[in-house]
Image 1: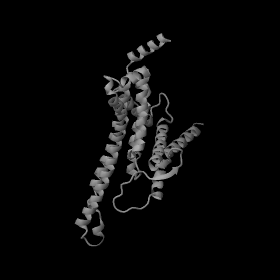
Image 2 (image 1 turned 30 degrees about the vertical axis):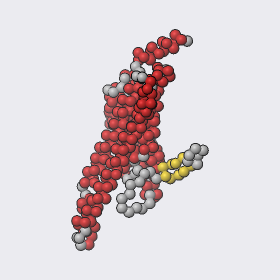
Image 3 (image 1 turned 90 degrees about the vertical axis):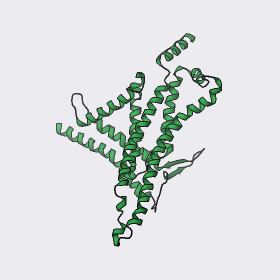
Image 4 (image 1 turned 60 degrees about the vertical axis):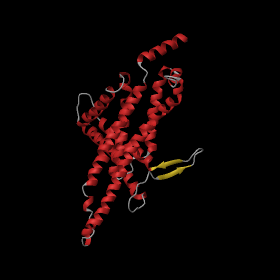
Length: 298
């Protein structure tokens, strides 16, 4: 019976590992089979695979959307793998890793948000961190990173904006609308612009940093190719075709833009999410006063 349980445990483990790896392999195969050959510098946006007619505008199925779903499947597989077989009183390596991740995210939330949010927004912040970081790191596999598509990042920012507005409405619609007239009524246009500037700035900051790294890396690699041909092209035979000057610097840039910058931008987006949601919370005293007034009026 014990051996049968161990066999079942290992089978589930392998299925979860496949759930993490196969989506990325499928993305690379799709890239190889569908991407047309190009010469020279090629900096393009997400390719459009399918266009579905809709009443207002066509629904486009793009490379960024497909890769986002692949990353989400990978994240789900990773989460299930790390929590598979966790039991009280038995400490395993994967449980240690899972607990470390939870502790780091909870520490990030508790250090920057009101205590009332600690149990609510931890999973959301963890999802933002994982989705942003892994989406950017897809570039290391030669795949189009979803964070290089402003539509994807704008979708995340809209979710954050909805949560911000939800917190601001905790003291009632009247107080929320009155805030647009603060400190004086002539500030209404500026307050409206400031309200919608938050999600726009979050999306543009994240998108701009990711796409700029991609552009810089591509231009440097292309420039080194030209320099290599000019300096070493006079060598006879195949020696003149060896890209010696492209060895080293592109790899260093890849480490910075594809790894360090990707993780840093994910962290910054998560911090901005925490601060903006927490800053929109009116406070426990204001909410209790609003509930008391509502009960009295009823």
